[in-house]
Image 1 (cartoon, one colour):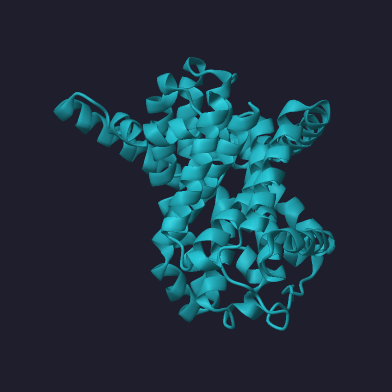
Image 2: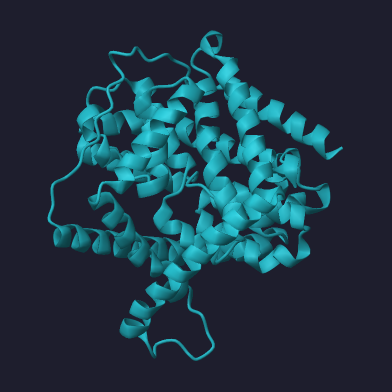
Length: 392
């Protein structure tokens, strides 16, 4: 029965993407089917095999060690602020982003990261039937983040038509940056974070290929990576500050969103006898159900999904940790994979602002298709959750 629901869910997601398609006749289904098969194989490999278990355990241990190193710096600066035995969210979850950001900067400076991103991007372009630039951008988004990625392709930005720009922005919103992965792993199981990272990459291409189908001519598909010339210590200073800015911004957004949701829930509870999140849960429960979540868990899961969409993934992950004991392991796996992406309303402004900082004209173009961008990225999250439901 679970496979039937997952297949129906898969068809519904493809149907919803076709509804928003610019040109249904141009959709090339061959690479789409191939990428769906690859997603299922990769999800099964990561979640259901000894190899996957060893790989994820290794990645989790690396991030655990990195968080320990980050903890040394945090303890030196903030030691004594926290009560013994307590684990403040800002100190233990957000501030390690600073150290991981520094590591990304070092790998970028040593030209290791650009080489990996370009290599994987070229390989992906052979599978997805899209341009080299689009494939590189998807990998780069997962490495350096949804804002920073546009700096690496700023030479091409002004020359990109709206349809190619949409695909670049869709990839940025559908993935998550490596600097934040460690923070996610403190709230949800590492195996679901790693699985989501991998299959979201293909999910972004699948949904973009349906909503925004096009073919790139070889003479238009020149891949040049913009690299800023800096000294080593200039780079260190920049990435340290960038990491701290991300931590502060996420922290500020959490304060605002968590407080706002608490206030709205209280008002709805007083007036209607039901919280705002419960109402959203009922609205999103059919989506949760087609993702393979049992109907008994669908309303609560739907509330978490809606919270992620209207606030951000951090708020939703915090909510999940509070009620996950009432969920089955299958539900936790599916909802965890759904949460690992930047698909929320605030990301529209973040991406449009990042592009506008490099090209005002293109930034305005992104703002115009912002809602369609969020629609596509949300479908990517739903698709990834459905793919995982096949193997759990």
